[in-house]
Length: 72
Image (cartoon, rainbow, N blue to C red; front, top):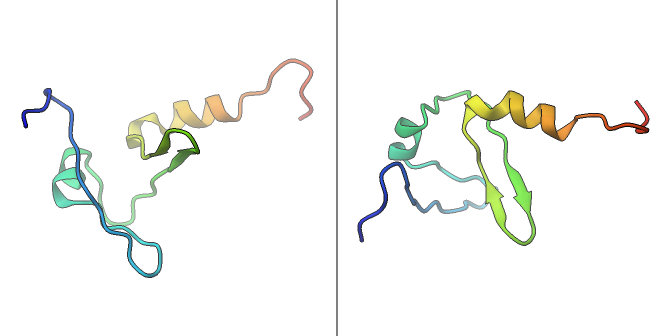
């Protein structure tokens, strides 16, 4: 099956402690190194996503953005 450029799919097995191993090809493509902290986003209808590191600041700013009338 041919995939579009820049699109990937991998599998990971969940161990007894709930840990997963990110496949080497995925670590290489996304420059994931030992000790890196990843963010996992979850949606009960759509599943779990692990966005790229470069999007952390944008995601945090969006998630914790104050709206008018919201308490600080």
